Length: 138
Image 1 (cartoon, rainbow, N blue to C red):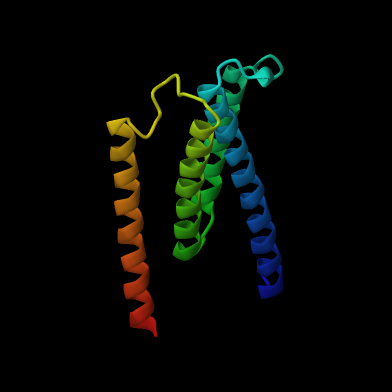
Image 2: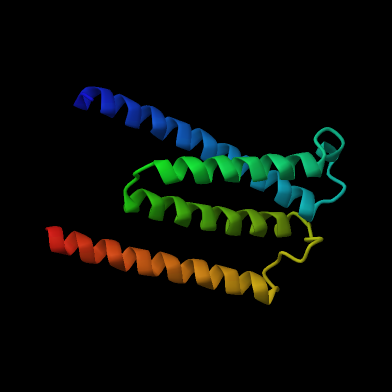
């Protein structure tokens, strides 16, 4: 395959992954809004179980596509960090808006902090690996 053709395919896949990630963020946002505000008016338009099934589908599609993708570790690091920050900020905003999680997903929950700690440790390890590999190459 020509280098130019591979470049176009990689560029197209990059757009596809961004669109899929956008839908994933949308579904997670809607599920968190439904959790914090159970009487939300969109619940009658789009039932929560439909959003949940769509989220599962998107996670499945993302997992399959990301396994096929040979994305640089730096991009994966950035996307994981952005996702973690986004969920944090969204939960904080929903708390400020007067919402309260019905499933217990809150800043006072120990399990939430354990999951966040594991994600942060993973990010730190990944960052150190990227830094070490960058120094060896440079």
